Length: 147
Image 1: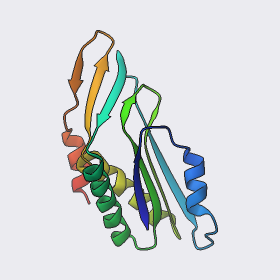
Image 2 (image 1 turned 90 degrees about the horizontal axis):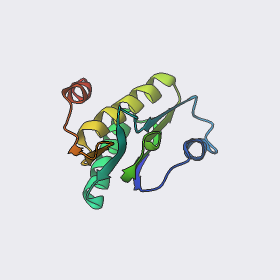
Image 3 (image 1 turned 60 degrees about the horizontal axis):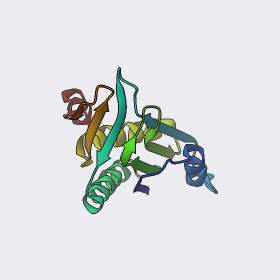
């Protein structure tokens, strides 16, 4: 099973992975990805907006697809929302399985599809006072299409 959640506040990546692995002797590999807000030149904040029920439902659907594709994989997805500053965590994907290949593949699948299919609207704030909505990137779409 792979679970998904949304939250405004920070997460503890080590604690999340420890909870995923607790009591499990059938697992031989764990993979963790933590996404951060990048400090692009002049970026002061990134605000993520969403419709909670719709966003969470889509995130869980992506998690369910990964679980069906890699049946032995356990996992956890946490995505933050609200106003985040450069250096802050924005997303956590942690997966575990009997073998590393499935754990890595599931983690990559989850991130590729979160980037393209999870309904978040991102607005950047710049030091010069301008704001702009972040548009979808063709490179993210290409990464998701490989699956």
